[in-house]
Length: 129
Image (tube, rainbow, N blue to C red; front, side, top):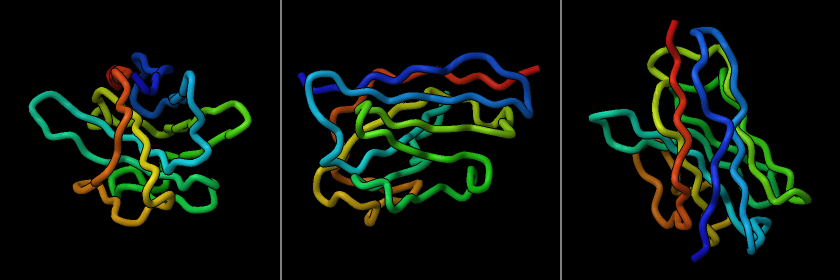
């Protein structure tokens, strides 16, 4: 089963930083757009960020613009989410997923992200003092 694996979550104080990683095992990610998503208790899953297969274009949810940055290292088959100035409302389980058609981040928003597959199990991020 083709699946992505997230890591890097944890407990951090407000204003702190974390870097999440999304890795693929057994298949390549360089032919896919990859997105980061999150789901807080009692809320629907929402899109956080998306990066094209080449890394040349990115999208962000309004709630994280200016604080989060997505990047990819195709040589390591890994996508990263750099999270800065974390707030308690960023607390959620964070997931990554991929999409092969299209390979750019069109048809992606925080509330609509069709076509993403190979969802990982998620990594918990808790922002609390």
